[in-house]
Image 1 (cartoon, rainbow, N blue to C red):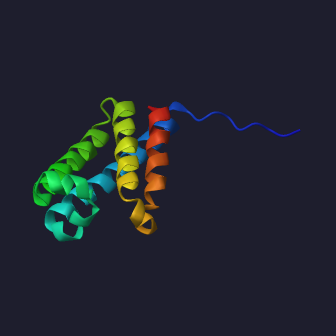
Image 2 (image 1 turned 90 degrees about the vertical axis):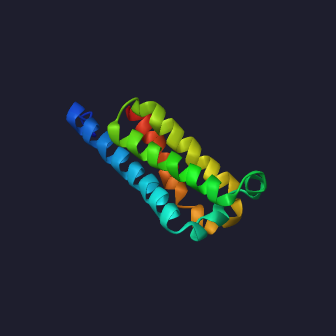
Length: 122
């Protein structure tokens, strides 16, 4: 008869949550810093319809600030379930508006599932 694995301990769950938060925060912090330092490399990912409404540099600066705030929120662990939901929704939105760049953004699928895992663990 097959032995069942024991359920993870509370300490293991806390470690998993921390690693998920750290990994997700690193992604958003990197994007915020890189988009601020090298905006020309990132402007093309902004939806064209938004670039018609406001200057691309302003949109990029605002989105970079949002990503930096999201990274900090993830690191704090405060209301982790909500931070994870916002992370997943943001990443889905990035993928949807950049479907033409799926060869680049396909890695975001892992970010979405990591955020979903964090949602369930929080």
